[in-house]
Amino acid sequence: MPEAELKDLIAQRLTMFMNSTVTTDNFDIYRSSWRSNPNIGGAYSFTGVETDLSSWADMAKPLSDRSWFFAGEHTINTYRGTTHGALFSGQRAAKEIFESKKGKGKK
Image (tube, rainbow, N blue to C red; front, side, top):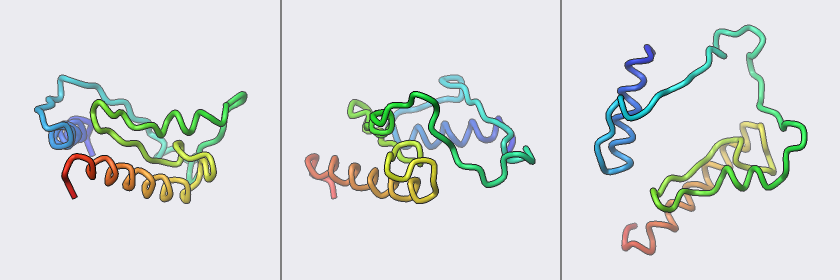
């Protein structure tokens, strides 16, 4: 997908999630070309030297002032850097979203 088209799509989704208009000049995007790199195929992320276990919990913390929730293999210590971690963190984030809406009268 061309970068301009991707940026338009992101702006549309952010507008929907944030309940206010987001235009493409409100943000920048940065992406790598890892898919075309022959040395990357199927690689997982890894823990850097001197990484503290609290790092995963910190990355998973929702931004309550904006109702943003985070998921991904980088947000779960138990299965960090794996597809399982991505799946389980998505399930965790979905529960957090559900719980946050319960108190606001939404189902």
